[in-house]
Amino acid sequence: MVKSKDLKDLIVECIKEKKGENIVVMDLRKVTSITDYFVICSGTVEQHIKAIKDNIIEKLSEMGLNYWHIEGEQANTWVLIDYVDVVVHIFHPLTRDYYKLEKFWADAKQEKIKTDYEQVEVEK
Image (cartoon, rainbow, N blue to C red; front, top):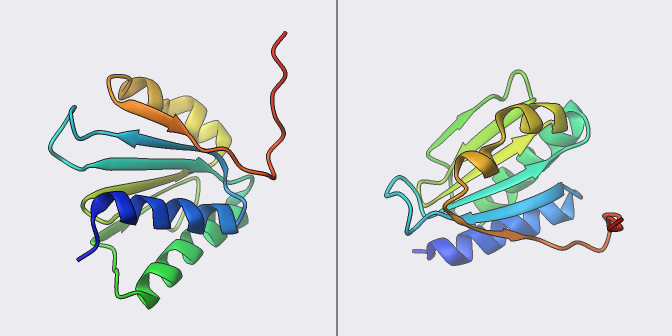
């Protein structure tokens, strides 16, 4: 059995392999009992979202880790992959901006994952 922290880390690596953007990990353990972590990221277009989703499912399945539930596969603007202790949200940027999950769950500890392929924003 994989611990939720390790599962979360595996998912983040799968997202980075497909260059998912704006990766945020939310630690929900002190906020709710529905799950331990949300892993949130964005894909640039529907095909990118699908590639991220497929990579997560394929790599974890190879390790014997299968998701419990998935939603949004048809539209590919917000795909949710539920691994029970970790829930993955892969958004199109406009959909992510509309729903603002990070603000909705603002009480949770949030960690922005740094990547070597995303541009760093310059503060003005």
